[in-house]
Length: 389
Image 1 (cartoon, one colour):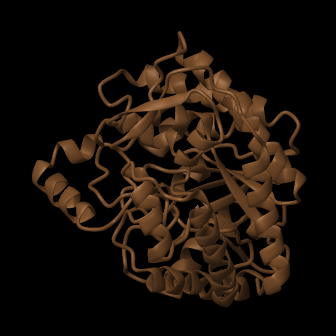
Image 2 (cartoon, rainbow, N blue to C red):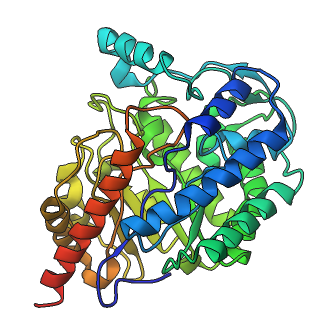
């Protein structure tokens, strides 16, 4: 994994806006319509050829495929693994429940646009979970590699994402295994295939684990804190086991409190979970640092012992607002973290993805890429300051 040896490198959290035509296909399939798989595959490859150059045009150093060939950052696994079927409605966020008028407004706005739901018609585990066929992940990796060659994108390092077993275990209800621990273990073994395949193709792996913070105010909102702590300890242990054959320097872990615009006043404080998160094997931790409920928590990183081999990828842009952050603000935030762990161990990132579920959110696609450009410009400002000391 590259470090910021002579300047601050830039990256993002993985998902990027999808073209309207591709979003339409994903939304149709999510509603239960019959959609030709070949049509989705072709639209996904077309979107891939579009999104890779957009990142390089913005100046991003560590880019990916934008998750164009997936309808959402974890839902795609239902077509790659056995055991999933039926449907259920996921619990609402604790903060949104407390503000019903705002929640209703948000639901109405989301319903006005074609999208893949993050709560409704989610599958359940109704049988044994196993990875069925490597063909899909092999194809996704090959497609990304081919587009990198075709476009000459020249990322310093390319990466691909795969979900944490914890986000699947909580969002895709368990109706088969006798315990959460056994469900997690099965998911970890299945996800091992994706983790190892991505790295074998020469890409960095990003494990998306919003569950390590977000599930406190969803699945565990009415349960004791100790139950949530036990859960995330199990998730970290499962991730570490699934990564047994993957070098730690090939992996980064993404943690967040949920990629949605909301009060977030029921979020668990970083200080309650940071010690557990630091036990994870991945060499880099990518986390929210621009969410207004968590901007102040940069100081928490000063209060803990961060292993010398850990890289921090703070989110320096929000992914839920069309405000374009000023490069000077980005630079200031970079310098805050550089003062904690050193400039070489900071990579500039975003809070979350700009398209975690196809069609969800109010972010304008063009503004998303303008925000990435602001990230790059901020990293350039910070680099001048940090390397002139």
